[in-house]
Length: 295
Figure 1 (cartoon, rainbow, N blue to C red):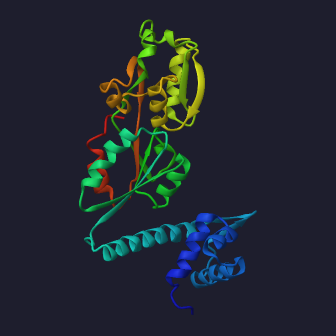
Figure 2: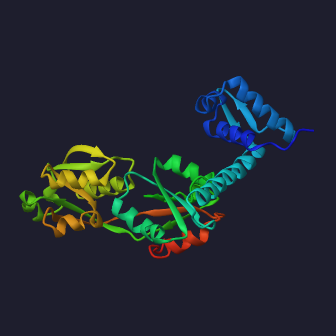
Figure 3: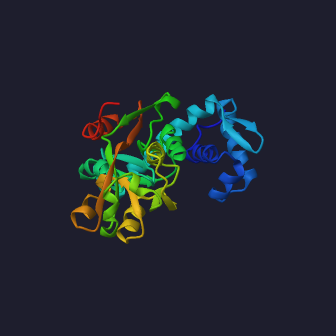
């Protein structure tokens, strides 16, 4: 009979599961594939069952492996919180909230959402950026508590719940030299230089539909996935930018930009996505309550 698996065995297994490969996990852990494979075999021998399905060039968790992976993730996150509490001499009941955000989301939207968390003395906040699929995967595997997205994913994941936050108006903005475009908007945008969000953004899809509906064909000079770059390009007088109103309120009030027009019927949605069984659901619900609207 083997002794209970130690922390290291569990961590090796967890890294292999994350990487989907013994070689990739070994590279990150500075261990040889053979040595790491031996450690995995010891763990599987202890449980008396395999934890992965061996597929071509990849290891995929089976049901037993998924159960162990979820629990290992909880263990490692609790260890991080304990370490933080001891090293920084903060209250042991400090709750760590990891928030994943899309780079295409408005920084103003994100700021509005996370500020109450930053102000909470009982909460430690970590904000990371990433692609939606990667963030949802981390959320589904207990590596994040919340994902802020521009679309709903609830129907695809049984254990996740999506909350629609307050939508924001979408406007076209530019410097004063484009003021003549206010007349006959949005048709005035035809052949006008516009910098757009990339097609990964839900807002871009809505904007494209709006322009198509009104038979407007602007001159697209480029695509970016950051609304801050859209605003800065407009402030430099390079182009017209179409983006959420709350991201340019300050620039409008300072006279750096003017509003050319509003895209009626088009809104910038932001969704907060969380696990239904999250241990932090009370904090999550409290934060969402200020922003939630009817889905």
